[in-house]
Image 1: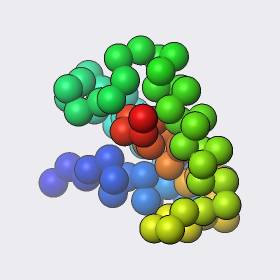
Image 2: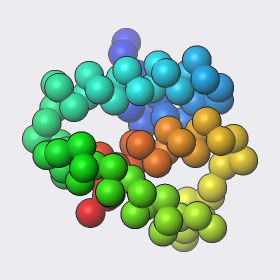
Image 3: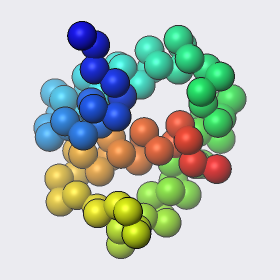
Image 4: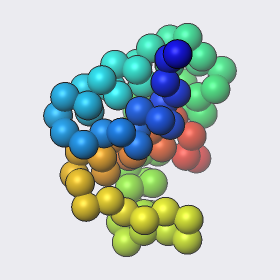
Length: 83
């Protein structure tokens, strides 16, 4: 059974698992472009940066992880959705 992006982002702990997540994120963009809020790399990166600024101290339903690899994966993941 293939893992979802959400499962993979939550499993990121180190460089190796971060690379696995990035590969899955890329495949998700190719397979499901209609699920992405952003059509360009510029808007995707802007959304990821905006969400990272918004969540730098955590959010109501989000606790910022201590693990930098996981935080980076979460930032990239949220670039898919954040407006």
